[in-house]
Amino acid sequence: MKININRIARYLWREWILSFALFFGVVAPLKSAIVDWNWVPTGSMKPTIVEGDLVLVNKLAYDLKIPFTTTRLSEWANPVRGDIAVFFSPKDGVRMVKRVIGVPGDTIELRNEVLYLNGQPQRYSVQSSAPFVRDVFEDQNPLIAIEHMDSSDHYVMVLPSKPAMRSFGPFVITPNNYFMMGDSRDNSFDSRYFGLVSRDLIVGRASTVLASFDTSRFLLPRIHRFIQSLSIEKLKEGESI
Image 1: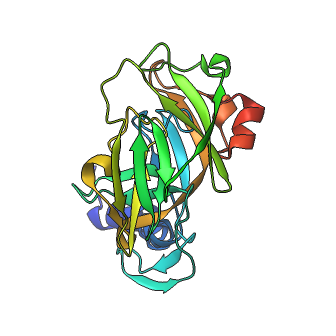
Image 2: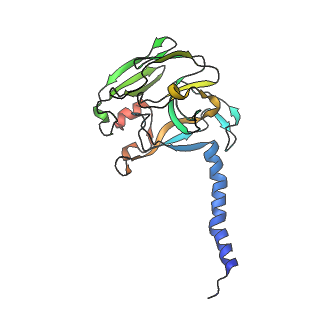
Image 3: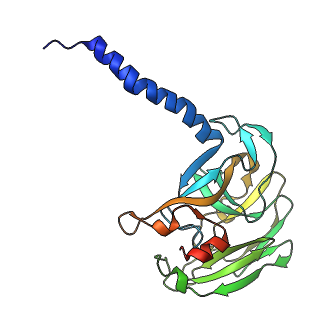
């Protein structure tokens, strides 16, 4: 049987290559400049975000960038304390998800796990760990609290048995830079180690878990975390950790 190479090529172009090219030409720029998602492989943001979460990234939260670049076309907002930001690490360029703790002009200090902002200690409300037993922690006796920072209440966690940097500073955040920390304070590689994050390296803001898969149980879906807001009120309602 004679194979018509030209006919096959036309078929592949019409049914596959053209469709893929159109899809890539439309979706890729949108993903690059408007909305994206970020797979979270580590527990540095526990108990707010856990390993296996797929978080939605709003790339229009602060500015509009040229697709596939970090060049801003327009800017209408800056990250504020308490935002969960997605950014490129100044150390190695890896994309990370952390919480904004300090903004330009702030003085940051940590004293035995207590965060000080501009000389003022933040308030903490210790929580029972009971709602969180579904997840596997690095420490079997984690201490969980709500950190009351400005208008942004959020969970933080410390791991008493784990060696960690529990005190640092004080130092002042320079212009156009931000201080990032993980909510799992004793299990996070963040600004305490790699320094401040330039505004130009910030990709967007995360506020929703699109989907979640339990990496300790063969990627079993965590249905209760699908389309889950990362606000502390919604996390409390769903006992979602």
